[in-house]
Image (cartoon, rainbow, N blue to C red):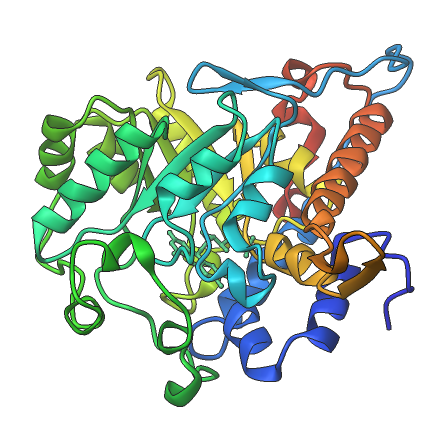
Length: 372
Ligand SMILES: Cc1cc2nc3c(=O)[nH]c(=O)nc-3n(C[C@H](O)[C@H](O)[C@H](O)COP(=O)(O)O)c2cc1C
């Protein structure tokens, strides 16, 4: 049982489990098949050990960095996840507000909020990237790209690990979230019925990156690469970044944990100026430090954001003589708390391993289990 005041990211999971309807919690929490990869993403971080340095004046730490040239206050950012309104009525807008100072990737297909409304609700210097799937109908992808460019998104994140949706044993068809929630980005162009049958393009090959590049001025980040072979393929195209990801273990069960895959991707990209990021299983500040030590420029987090969103959904009814009854959802401060806890833990991990700046976090700080 979590303490009543959450002190670590996993406490938010316990609260979300208590507060959300079981089927929704399981939709968010679960993964493909036997969920081996969901667990392994977390456990692989725990298998790695740290080799701290001492006496390095860590009295002031600078956690700031850049991604694709834009400054962020810390290398912890928000992965694209669907259906934020399942966790909180303010949905993606609350998440985007809480992510101020870092980067948020909005799921275009699965967002309950129109992508234009998300950028309109946050300050213009917020860093928002948009995640795309490839639809059979390329026009839908093209329209999404154009809307994203117009609305101020600063990069396109193309998810490559989902030519088809993985098999999740816990998802029940009768409560499948797309039947309950709006998906305004795709509904804008198509009728609901068509959208539900829209389908991803299973026939896509690497040339699709060139097609995407030809229709946009935005940098392209590819998400869902786990191998050196695919990294080398990606480098042949105009890709600015790679997110090492297995979709949080929701697509192909039994694949490599992402932190285990990271070194081969980093090695294959060495010498290029493509930035490498990682997501999957990041739950602690030391996980962030391990990922950076192994070559990631930043980490992205998925489920913990949704748990944070679900943390504070209590409805406040306040009465005042002049305003009558005023109802207000407490803001999604839970997301900010999740990000703040991770940031504090990361700062602590830097201090205790002798790092003052991000560039002090080097590969010799981590030792893999095979070397123990
Ligand atoms: C509920 C849920 C919905 C997701 N929806 C998307 C999505 O729409 N597009 C996408 O590229 N990835 C999606 N992902 C995968 C995340 O972007 C990310 O890869 C993963 O959650 C990272 O693992 P973590 O949850 O352990 O942090 C989703 C993940 C979850 C848990």
